[in-house]
Image 1 (cartoon, rainbow over the protein chains, first blue to last red):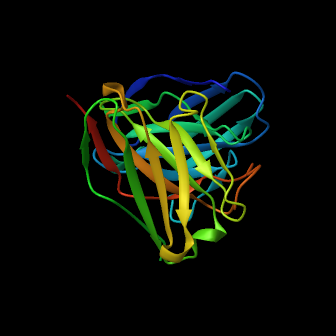
Image 2: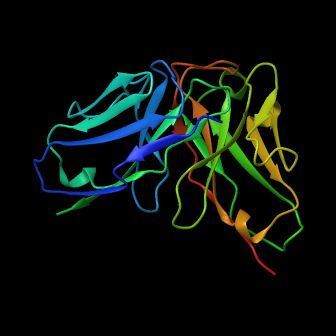
Length: 107
Length: 125
């Protein structure tokens, strides 16, 4: 299985901050990387697929970049509704795997 | 409007089996692959496997291979996940999720675009 390592595991941010979350797969996955947001008590929500494609309805302050073994999810200006846990997930292999998650908290 | 509605919470004893249903509406089940993902209390997401939309072929994670079965009933537009030989560590919320674009196989540029509400399965003696 492809192992997905996210960092940091948690971070504190103030409203308006620019933040970045990193995801590193254990092998190259080209650009086949997705990002999800999960709020307490809710199902995950797809934010970005294929590294940088925004899912319908996702605000443009979210962006994704990277390739191979190094990927980043960036929120350009954190809003109150962005405090959540973020997961990366690879779709390179037919056996999919998720990262361990990054909790974004209010500073 | 795509909706996935899952069956209700279940409690099982260790060693038993559980079957969770995922009823799709707003689209035809046989057009897109269905994934199953679980989340133990306070933990991250674990991909369990998926069922191909058009060939009915299923694939599971290596950790669950042999204990999990994915099926679908096109006449009811419903997918099912059955987990056997339950252990306390199988206690989790189980989600079904639909592929954004893909019917199955090598779905590279594809994510899980639609999710069910989750089903809590508790395994306890």
